[in-house]
Amino acid sequence: MNSLTLIQRLINKYTLVTLLMLIISLSIIKAQDGHYWTEQYGNKSMLLSGTVIGNVDDLGAVYYNPARLGLIKKPAFLLNASLYQLTFLKFEDGLGENIDVSKSNFGEGPSLVAGSFNLKFLNNHRFSYSVLTRNSFDFESFFRTQDEGEIVENMPGEEIFVGQVEINSKFTDLWLGITWAYQLNAKSSLGVTMFASYKTDERLFDMRLQAISKENGNVAIFNTSREISYNTYGLIWKLGYAVEISKTVSFGLTVTTPKAKLGGSGEFVTQEFLTGIDTTGDGNNDDIFIANGQEGLSVDSKLPWSVGAGFGFNFGKLTISVSGEWFSEIPKYTIIQTDPFAAQSTGKLITNSLVDELNSVINYGLGLSYNFNEGLSAYLSFATDYSAVPDDITRFLALDSETNNSTFQSDIYRMGGGVVFNFKKMEFTVGTTYANSRSEFKSIIDIPSDGESKVEGTTVMKLNQWRFIVGFSLPFAKEENN
Image 1 (cartoon, rainbow, N blue to C red):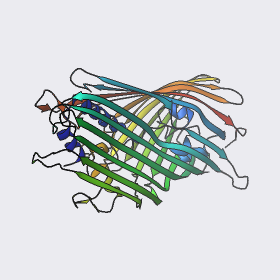
Image 2 (image 1 turned 180 degrees about the horizontal axis):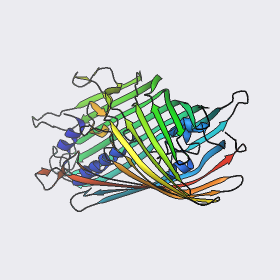
Image 3 (image 1 turned 60 degrees about the vertical axis):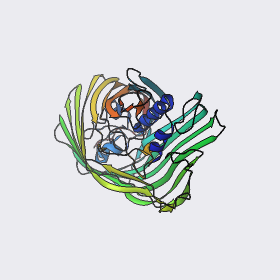
Image 4 (image 1 turned 180 degrees about the vertical axis):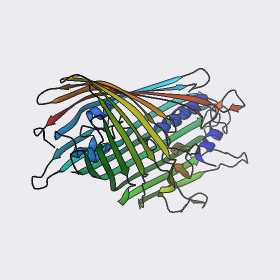
């Protein structure tokens, strides 16, 4: 039996079980590895929800289509000066029928810093450097409870019970890029960005339950914890082609390669202790002692192939951006796995592993921009962000021997909007993006519906996220005549 099954057999306590269900439910929003259009880069590109593969005109080009860098007339330094995000989570029936749970979080969002430059002895060549946050997630939760009553099923009479749960999850994927673009002629160009990725992932689940019997003074203790931490680094290439088909229509095409792994290492810690409880009813305590920590483990990390295409239609003051991108599937593979080890109390061989598997998805979007005059433009957009996570997964907090890395199965829909003010020496952007998602899933832990029976619970999760954008671009060169 795994740790959660054992907990269910030990504790018949509504408040603790529903708390566990809530924490495990929260774990589904772990870093969105299975979503590829979560982040946007470049001030205008963010307002257009990334629908700019065919006509990106800011330094978001280093990510969306490096070939467009050859057609941008004003090299600039770009900084998403401030990006803050406000996230609302609501779990309908999260603590039982008609009992909802809400959670909100406010913090800084991912960022991009980029600049471009030319080399005088290389005509029609343009270069850029960039630093962007491809993915990030930081979640911490701690709960402690103390109670008295008939809480531990396998202890006679009432007990004094103390329980605490801690869960931490922190994830960052930082990309450093260098971009080269070559202008084939006045209307078309080629480009490539090479990104160096450095990814770190840390997760901790720790539960401690203690009880003392009021009847005979016997003490029972159950502790279980699992911790994973790893880093991996590699290279990704994005190739692009851009062409101005006419004064009205532009087109872009991109291909992004999987990650070429260069290295990485990981650590996996598993602990489980039980004493003072007879879980089988045979009159003997079933003590458990499992402790194992392994360092220097081999780590793998994969990204899919992707092919993107987009059009830009310029009708004078109104510009329409349309883009779509296909991402290949990633067959099941192991990210990190421990060597088999023997449980000290039973001698049983145990191994733990973190795996990943992602389906193929296609995302698409539409963006509109309107130039009121030379100094003011407005933007509006919509885009999908479909989940590539399969239906059948095992979450990390299930504490099974094999768990999945990507867990967020909900499709996300995004909208963006804002304005850009053009000054002589600066371009200033103010706007917001909004994302929402709804999903229904079964509780990992059963909820006691009465003193004897248990029923499986269903929770509806609603995600609403706002991002507030304040950014600017500073041109470092005069407009060029291409």
